[in-house]
Image (cartoon, rainbow, N blue to C red; front, side, top):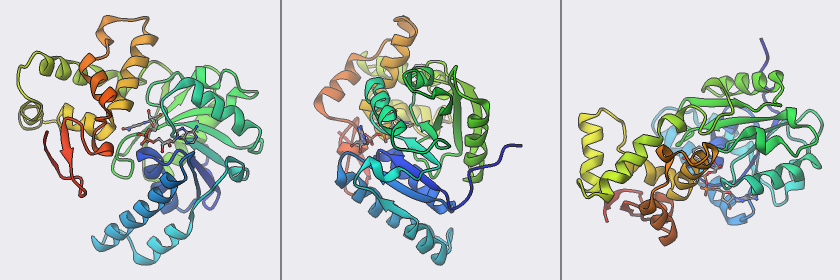
Length: 297
Ligand code: NAI
């Protein structure tokens, strides 16, 4: 069986938004040295402060030892330049969901990291094969797809592109398991497993809302209370972020040559145009206060 990356080795996380912060929190708590980078320095500071608070809450609830929390905090550091991730054993990318931007980042990283470093992308929907295609060594790039919120969601999809070396996917699989996750191997298909199966959940809900079948809160309540889902579709899209959710739908739609089943929603596009991105911007289908409590718009 392939081993996980060694405890104490450096995990670089690029992008310190919702997903990057969650991945950093889990990796540091699992005994790895974490280096966080973002083109917006304030995002790194916020992520580190938020992770510290999350560890504090876990200690208060008796789910983490105070000494372990301090040690995890000490393993976490922000870096000001991409060059500072040179010593990483793995780089996990969690930046904007855009193929060209991700390709450019990995091309830069190839010139910075050592030969043994694994390059992982947390993309929700972009072809892992395509992200890797322009690299000198595409065999070391793999998808490591976490779910939101990362500390709570056990599933990690380990996505192999056409060029991904099986040993690289196996190491990432074992590392996710060492972080307490429940990984699954999958091939690079549009939307992979979960985001493919979930497309109609969002699309039909958005169509129902556009047709004024009921309001968002009612539709969410029906899916939660009668349907047995943990969250309704609108609450979930607000959590994911409409910019992210919309780009995932667009990318699955394009990847299937415009298959009408995956047609993106004009209503959701308008939410993105307005900057109503969900929890992260304070407003989506609901409004969110400082404590992230939600209220009807
Ligand atoms: P986010 O918008 O919360 O954070 C993205 C961060 O990346 C921002 O802080 C931004 O400043 C930074 N960034 C953008 N371009 C950069 C670059 N070139 N170099 C360094 N930093 C850069 O986005 P979120 O939700 O964390 O998503 C990140 C990735 O994770 C996307 O690929 C998304 O599809 C994927 N993902 C998102 C999930 C979700 O529920 N939001 C779930 C699973 C995967």
